[in-house]
Length: 402
Ligand code: NDP
Ligand code: MG
View (cartoon, rainbow, N blue to C red):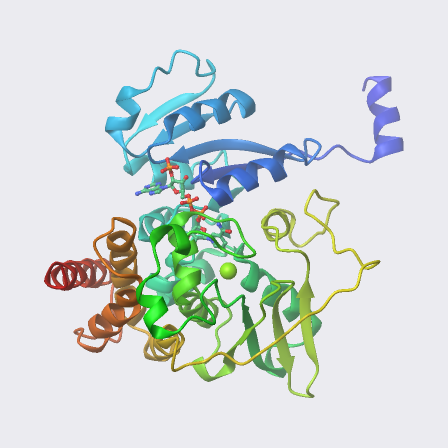
């Protein structure tokens, strides 16, 4: 054994192999934050693979920086337009959506970061769980659409789903303070979005630019719109229901405009355990990657030398029907989550394309949900079918409203 190795082990302990991480959705807001966390990990984490949809220029730059084993592009047209000659020699280029599943299950990855937006992220989350991987889950749609099937698969394969969503990361952390049967309820915090105090007439005038300016978080466009309609909180209620195996009546929502308390667990003796930190996704991302350990990190810290106010107020269920929709879908289970999510994705896309008013997004989702053909115990294919039908329904409504 070389002498320097013996010295190293005596002074530093046995060197551990870096954790290999596949980042699916690496060009998005969560994906970019994940790469920052990995870059600051002093070599304890390494990128195994990257995947993106169409932003090939950024994907190429990321590949040059981290030299992964493979990169996948799901939009073949975008891949065809890019000059890949500067791709590192050791990096394999994969083109087509089917490669997401391959990367998610590949033996080179210990952890798969599921950070694709929308139900497009579902199959790769599924493949990672099927391969028994730890999934750092940002793609809440995986649980909203396929909750019972995903959690059952994870159980069967001994795979872990570690939440990246800040509220769920907070609950996940607060749950370590007590036993499962001692939990009375979970309280999800919501910033309330930028339009908390607008009148119904003013809500009808909201433009795409208004909806994309979130007061406390910088995120991708779809989730930013979801935060403004409170549909993001609806999806998070459904996500929490499956992730933590709760009944819908054990999930409450409170408006907390500062986004410092990321969520709470109330125990049966009345104790409430909360997780606090400045609004910075690097913290929940890092916790998902280092769990069950905590390490030094680059996320912003709270400054206790300055006065700070934390405000909580009950949400207005009349103004924000999305919350009721979320609770109803969480209680119904079955195809309900797939329908709410599919309808919302289609409605947000129509709004971002300028074809649907902001104040129409939630009512359309409500109508599609109330009229859908509910299946209590669907297969994965039936969930995809329900998702597709919900989208078609929204397009039909959207055409009628112009
Ligand atoms: P972004 O829109 O910023 O990024 C989305 C990523 O997914 C990009 O890498 C994009 O590639 C890729 N992508 C888009 N469509 C497809 C597709 N059809 N197939 C494969 N890849 C695709 O989203 P965010 O990072 O904001 O959100 C990602 C997920 O994390 C969402 O589910 C969101 O709800 C969740 N989340 C996000 C939070 C945040 O702070 N941003 C907080 C909590 C949860 P390309 O760039 O090439 O188009
Ligand atoms: Mg969240």
